[in-house]
Image (cartoon, rainbow, N blue to C red; front, side):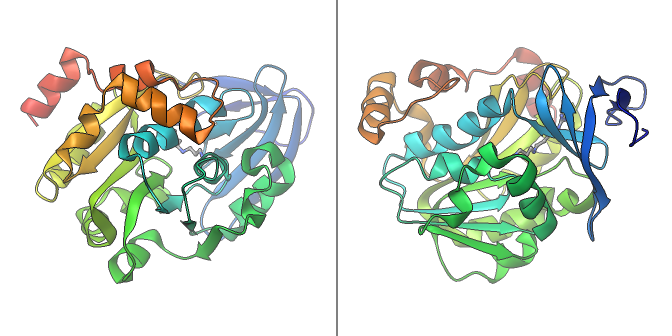
Length: 289
Ligand code: AG3
């Protein structure tokens, strides 16, 4: 990847023999932070794009798909979440969506890399849309694994918005992290996490399932297709001791959605319900895990 000239390109390096490529109309910022390589560039199709360690994290054009599914599915399934914890999520998109729920009393976000927050506020301002200045938001710069294991607070919904399991995100897929989640999740609460693109990262689905299953009554997944996370549908991990949360019917979700006054571009209550239906190859992978 060359960083200066207009019309140089960014080739995603997630997979060894295949990847997506972007024309970089302009590189807005590139840096090796204390934790990872970050680049933010402009592309005519996707708007401003942010990549960490060679992997696309978010684009202006399709970020709503990911952020709405990561937030509104657990929040509306729960129905009365007051305390929410976000791990990672430095671009602020998750925080923005959580704060749209009027019943939320406080949101704690634990991000390891202050520079990701600062650069995203500057170059992707519509992601956080002022959320970092919201009176209900409490931002902690810390290691997520340490935070959840040492935390004495309890949360109703916990959302892990991490990179893939490499670099600083790797620890957010370990049993130690999930143990910490269990420690600070309310008994009727739910934990969700981005879990990769299942067709190409099937092992990740198996590993997460095997690590969550011993800790929670239910470890499961739901899905959504985020265009710039190429390779098909992304799976989101779902872990809870509250078996009712996955079973909430569409009419109840509709009522909660209306009551919260939400306006979405991807999420709908019907889609929420359907997103728990998984293709056979994933069910098989979990069974043979
Ligand atoms: N974090 C998840 C990026 C996952 C990309 N992985 C992939 N394509 N397999 C995104 C941060 C958005 N707030």
